[in-house]
Amino acid sequence: MVRLEDRRELLDAAGIARVLRRIASAILERNGGPDGLVLMGIRTGGVPLSQRLARLIAEAEGPAPALGKIDITLYRDDVFSGLPRPKVGPTELPGPIAGRKIVLVDDVLYTGRTVRAALDALMDFGRPRAVELAVLVDRGGRELPIQPDYTGLQVQTGRDETVKVELVETHGQDRVVLRRRLEDASAPPAGGREDR
Amino acid sequence: MAFPHRHLLGMADLSPQDITQILDLADTFLEISTRPIKKVPTLRGRTVINLFLEPSTRTRTSFEIAAKRLSADTINLSGSTASTVKGETLLDTARNLQAMAPDVVVLRHSASGAAHLIAAHIDAAVINAGDGMHEHPTQALLDLATIRRHKGDMARLRVGICGDIAHSRVARSDLIGLTLMGAEVHLVAPRTMMPPGIETLCRPPGRVHLHDALDEVLPLVDVMMMLRLQSERQSAGLFPNLREYSRTFGLGPARAARLRPDAIIMHPGPLHRGVEIDPAVADGPRSVILEQVTYGVAVRMALLYLLGGGTVEA
Image (cartoon, rainbow over all chains, first blue to last red; front, side, top):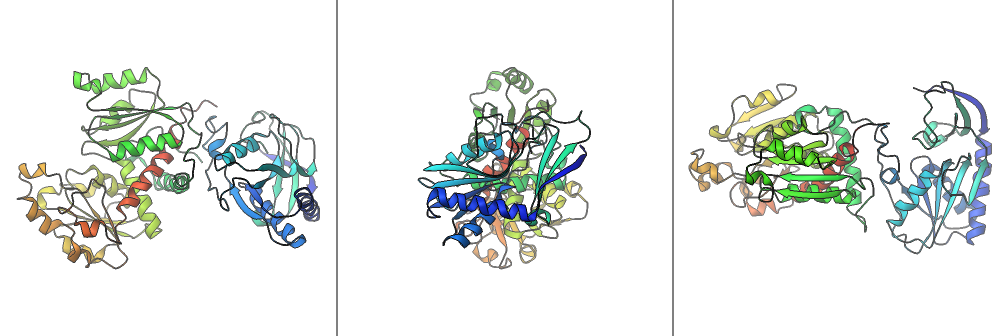
């Protein structure tokens, strides 16, 4: 077991609320309103964030966008890398996605491999008109040419660090913490399963 | 989520936690079969050999579909095309297959213990798709998945299994799996078809009850499972004739009416209509026989996912 040490709080509850409001209005501005939008949370961290964004969009401008959840486990490039098999969860779509505008939502963007898998998974359900990416934290360290369209917070982190997003829905409180591994020897290489 | 097995040879090797893990995964995989593109790339580049040295339509097709929906390459070898008909031993066949480096070998064989034998000699993961009168674990798992969907928690559930228990690997695997999950099993068979010592398969002991009359079991059970009667058993003198068997151990509309209103009716197939089960019952509203087949694909996808990734190399 890798022990982690809290280094600093990147966002508190007010900070998370603030950046989500900013992302929600940027999504509205860029898409000219909520019509035809689908917010697709990447399981599991992106799901509560997509629901909050949908609520914020509905409060700001009429109807809430459609919501979906996407599980990327079966599309991972490291599914058989020797670690225990990751748990597979359900994918839930709000109907056909062909021709619609999708915003993928995740909590932390790191190597980009999760987003690559999510794009492949999405395309197997149809051909969306466009796909955008919204993330709460972009921690750098990309291994694939993938960039977010909406970023809550940008922070450069090292390989021995992790970014932990805690939300009321799953952890009982809202905060984002930067942590550092204490035993460096057992740290998996970047792009491993612990890619947060 | 670690699955602590390299092969699936029998229900007897599994713990309740293993079974729950497989069933949870199967529930997730059900959804893939409802998509417009019924395929995910997970097992791309992996090879699954279906070695079926005994006739089978449903199980072989089910394994093939499961492997294809996970993007594995599948090769089917059946009794008539395999070189076993040219006198090759099972072990030689297995070694030759191993030399072609498959990731999973699914074996159906008429000899009990065949899957164990090849598992000890090859590197690929072995899934037992039925070995003689021993076990048929994937059938038991799809039965458990179907039962769980309809009845929820299996603890203290009462399940009746009626038919040729002695020759049925399905009955053995179901008995082990159901009792492991906390259910109580009521076995019904003519005395000539009830194997002595069957209750020792029950784990923990004491959750199995033996009967020689179907009528006394009907009002008790939440699930009634009918087994196929192989007509060739008649020549062995195990029962007088099909009509007599059907009258005593067949599930017709009158008997089905004596089941509890919420009881479900199951059958592992192939159906012997009019013998162990009446068409009106098999096609009736309480029958979940085709759901069992649907779950068969999902359960086999779950197993291929858990076992098909090769050995740990981190």
